[in-house]
Amino acid sequence: MKRAKQSFGGGWTEKKLESVRQYLIGYRTALKNTPFKTAYIDAFAGTGYRTTLANNEPESLLFPEMDSFLDGSARIALQVEPRFHKYIFIEKDPNRFAELQKLKEEFPHLSEDIKLENKDANSFLKGLCQGPSWKNHRAVLFLDPFGMQVTWDTIEAIGQTQAIDLWLLFPLGVDVNRILTKSGRISPTWRNKLDEMFGASDWYDVFYRKSKTQNLFGEEEVMEKIGDFDSISQYFVNRLNTVFAGVAPNPLPLYNSRKNPIFVLCFAVGNPKGKYPALRIARHILEK
Image (cartoon, rainbow, N blue to C red; front, side, top):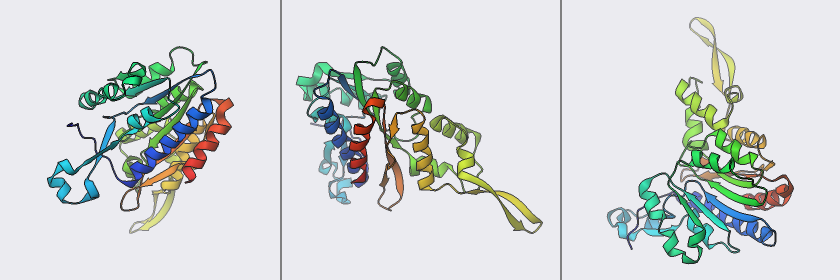
């Protein structure tokens, strides 16, 4: 069976998906005897599959049939037991969405409870969060964007439900740290983009400070970048703490083959009453 490809990285992808898988199992086990209706929401669901080059060998590039298809987050969630009551998969790209629709055929016993949305993730999620009462519903949401697509108003809407636990891939090295130039000169376009993602503009004062240097004409005042991977991650964790009942203080850095952190996997819990057990499970997973 030929499938549309959606390729991802190596070990860091495995760590990300395994962390989410473990939490989904713990979450559903903890809530299985409660009256809540539970949902798994995947806002950048892709195709449901991911591909990896067989053994990462050069000949795999010449013979793509050697690629192996592995489960993506959507398929992983559909295999979790105890099962969720509802599955919501969101994918904007029409080609990936067409592939995603095959999940109903692959999981016929769940097909009536699988909801597929070919929409923009931010728009759909804000509408979902601001919809009917969440009093009798609970959900786990996985935000796994390719970059800085998730805006703060979406994250804020998620937190305000007080019913959704969030796993979010923060683009630490692939985007944010690259935008934060050493000189502090950042274009208005990128400043606005960071403002939209952080939901604040004080990040500049956190990541930069004024310093003085000598040049041919005497002393000059310049901006110095003091934000590093750790402080950028901590700033984002602090921002999450302003809208969620609790946030894991130990987000998981995910490294590329050069040992550079490219993403940070963050966890936030929505419901105040479920704060401590949820954080206990998540912190244990992130510490592994």
